[in-house]
Length: 127
Image (cartoon, rainbow, N blue to C red; front, side, top):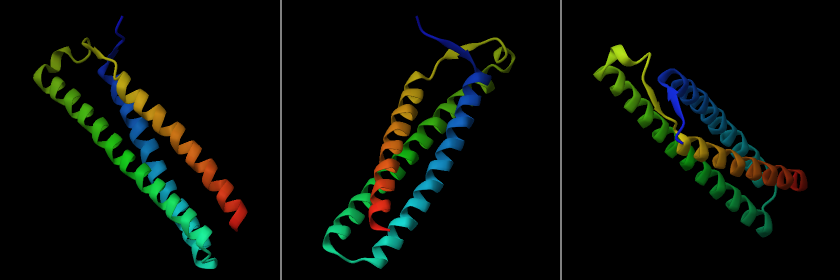
């Protein structure tokens, strides 16, 4: 059976997710700065390969954040259009749960956590 939620519940989740994504975007900047610090202090070939690896991984995560942001904002726009079409029903109408968005956020957060742990391990070895 499909879960239904009010527009207010969906909107709250959207806001939460967008705020989390902003946090992760800021964290990527911090991670890149740490990588640059190490890169400037040591120019060995082994380190250069690892630095490139982490820069690429962070770039991929940033792109994923952009995709997730876009998807969430698109869904928010859909909800807004629904309200404009029938403003009287907004308090009573139930919408399909955005299960796919939730799954995408969960997967992203797990991958980001794994990358963060890998980067922390890298930083502890090279600092």
